[in-house]
Length: 604
Image (cartoon, rainbow, N blue to C red):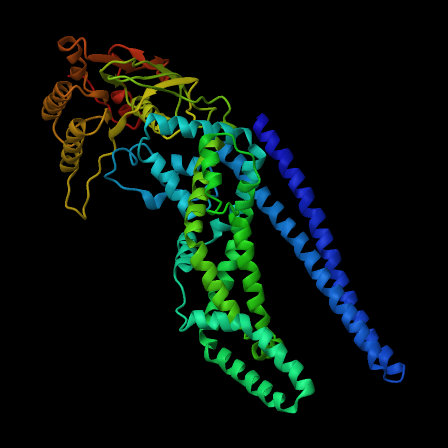
């Protein structure tokens, strides 16, 4: 509740700022109407005073300068209002995430793959997933980076590297929210926005004789000034000046198609880059301590240590200069005397060639920060969560105290303890329907995924080896691939058995093996698979309703461990405590559940 109260206070402060800046912007908007009124009055005054045109000219100059200043000030306060509006959305989203697992950011569905080792079974991607819960990435590269972290375990060095950075960002809560607000605009854009920007920066316009034109565009101001001065003293120079003006205008006109194209594309790209520059500045202006965040921040500098945000400002100035051509009179004068538009187009193309590689690195840095703040949001919103200890060793460690499923609301979440310390075991988990077997397997799996990407876990404490999780839980048939449920199970088993031999340290999670066949084959097949996994020295968990599988503990006492979830029946009501216990389950509830829907199983 403390964190929610903090967000509510911040939202109230943001609302106050929205109101202040909106009121101020409206004040400047009203003054613009006053300027227009003054200009109209100046026309009346100049007519009344014997058509004195100089009165009108004086007021026109004053009003133009005044109007320009008012527009600049209004834009500044409008930008602040938009910023606080986006900040408010970011803060409201955090409350929605805590209370309802809602999220305005992307849910990662495009990265889903039914054949992935664990993503489908553990709800890593898609609607209602772990990705949807934690994602705070507005850009396509940020989403991709976070997805890649969740879909494969990192090595111990990288995990610790990320943990350090996540801890630092969790301490910079206000910076994190400011960064998110600056980037929130990108959630409204197409997913390929950054990709398209980088493509624009890499793709140049081919300008014939570019070097010669560039040299000429730099010389022409001095040449034209010389001809103007000569024209004052020598009549023949006026003919040369006229010819030079006509030649310059024709030179610009000949490249008008390329200039129009450059103006259209550069204008859109420049506007988007200008928005991104605010996020770049957030990173550039912060003091970073962890190795990872420091490295990411350094990627926002070119080889001369110039900041990316300053390079974007250079592009903005070039685009602004190119836009002088939008006034027809200004365009004519600049063309005949300075070949202005041609010069600015060449300058923009040269800027692109000199900077495109810097921006590829810069957007990768943005993506890295987005992935890190996604993980840091867990520590901020759930301060009771812990960072796991990453354990070395030849065998498996996966131990936790008070471990719970992160996608279950805390008011409903039941936590458990589990211990696997530097050993190799296959744990058989039996129990009644709905008693918690599947949820426990997913709890172990999803927290291991979090642990091995550098995030805090939903546990009081956790120790884990770097393992490859492979799940066998939601087996589906496929009409498109003509695959039956049993065939799908066989394919998954084949993948599991192959991975145990080829992947480093596989930890498997199996929920009700071979359910697509008869009970005899199911038992015999399951028993054979488990014995094969023992032979391969595999480690993992197998949840089953089949009590005969639990008998394997007698045959392999050093390898098999039995756990169970049970129920209590009180006055005909089933009570679940969802707590894991050592041993085999003795109480089942299928017949009671069937009876509730009007089917009496009876006794034989």
